[in-house]
Image (cartoon, rainbow over all chains, first blue to last red; front, side, top):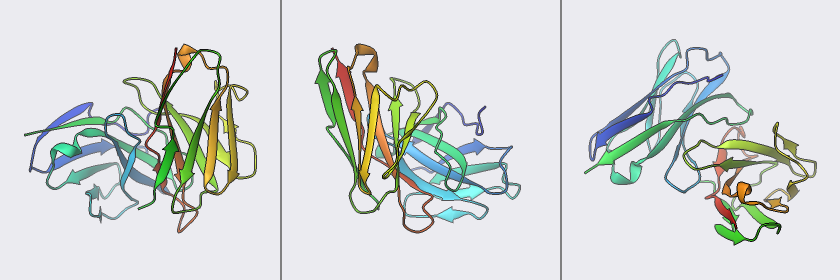
Length: 109
Length: 117
């Protein structure tokens, strides 16, 4: 029973912005949107999370639609080291993180 | 940012032996830690949730007598794979939830790759 839908894979040129979409049409009012990424053979890395408002940190920006049914993770200037599987997860604050299949982002020179 | 370490990073063992994996939160306290397993080309699957000072909660299908979890302090959880068999070969990843602030964010260790011969 997937709570989020993400494209299987995406490509991005180095230096360009990578925009990763996520659909979460059944999200409830108290569920946050979290993004993690997993570089090959490493543990997942926390990127960003948000509830309603757009968020930005040193790694990325998170844009959440007004109806909260979808969101976009933006890596403003993708580098080769951003090649990874990106997971969009919705959860209530203290609930366990459940991982789907994510989006495999390939950043090419 | 919060750092979680795991030791060892990789281990090769013979079938029938036991392997212990340590997970430490280096710069924060974690009442709750999690153990995940990841097979090749698959996503992470939660195995169990461990709370400091109490018994772990295992997910359906995970044998608690085979995967022993101990969370004796606020910065250390261990996973022991007992009587390991080749089908236990996998990438084991721990995660810790910081007690500070809202406590919502989970931080992950680098993973331990287990190969059982």
